[in-house]
Length: 445
Image 1 (cartoon, helix red, strand yellow):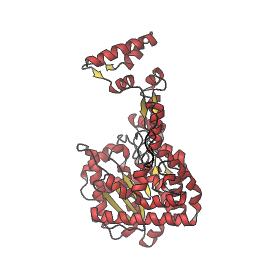
Image 2 (cartoon, rainbow, N blue to C red):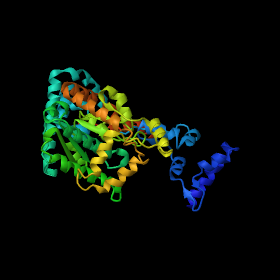
Image 3 (cartoon, rainbow, N blue to C red):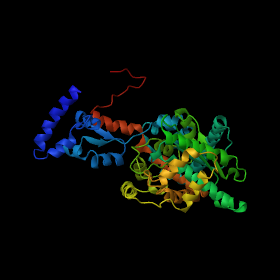
């Protein structure tokens, strides 16, 4: 603490010199929050002591500069930067999806043409309309789905059809990531199927396998309640023979990198549906796009930049933007109620009436959400989410169109290579240059 106080003393002296008539500003920017007890403002300390500070997605870096660190951005222009995350294509294409890697290499003249310079994949854009390329791409996706089908059987005991849309959300279980909204939509879809005459169901609904995976922190009660709801819905839906293969629900156990290397190449739709303004970046969205998977998501985190790169027409975007989220939260704080709506109300009623067994652990969570506690806009974004899901169904029925969108996603995913990220750190933060590595036949100088 003595060192922190010393740093703060020197820092405050500089602040007073810069803002001699603004004691309130100096107090706001102090590294120590006065009170009983005093507190260290760790984020402020980090900014003051660091050469550079960076966010990991443009949206959130901009938010930091415009909101909580606005005065520090004014004090230290250029110190707060953005370096959008990336993932390595060696692991997330070449290793986990070798057949797709072979297709890319065969088309571009070798693996070295893309695996260390992913921007070169833009050469594939014209191939989105090439019949041979498209057919091979479709075959690869199907083979990966067969592998995942076997993995699901081995790890969950459930049989899932290959001829269905593979809809996946895999990430840490958290309220802001909104696995709850996903499973609420699944319940809505299940209720809609039940309400449709048997003879009309196949025409109205695309067969879908919804897979949700992730881990909850040991003490995170609500996240564990979500897992309980997901598994209860899974048991009910998967054993309802009247629904058959129109809908299957799977909770993917023990999600980790090894599992991801099977799941991601097989996925056709990936859900990245966090409340706008809450996800720092996300990297799994990048992995899914590189593997020919379409995204349904909000304009949050790296989704924003993925949308800029591949085009909004190749994604399924829904939900409030950041400014809308803040506006709605303000109305909730002011007492706004009656925002659940009829269709979501039926979903909540089904849960509370025991359609999915004893999920009473969810009842207080639902009551809280319905009575002003919808901080993550599960209710407010739900109907926009339903509309986006309908677009998913409509697009999937035209599988050639779906595949073209997926290929364009792969072709325009170059920005999200970790090579680009690391290069930006080297040139703009660390000020280091790459060291050339001699080929095996050469002698190092």
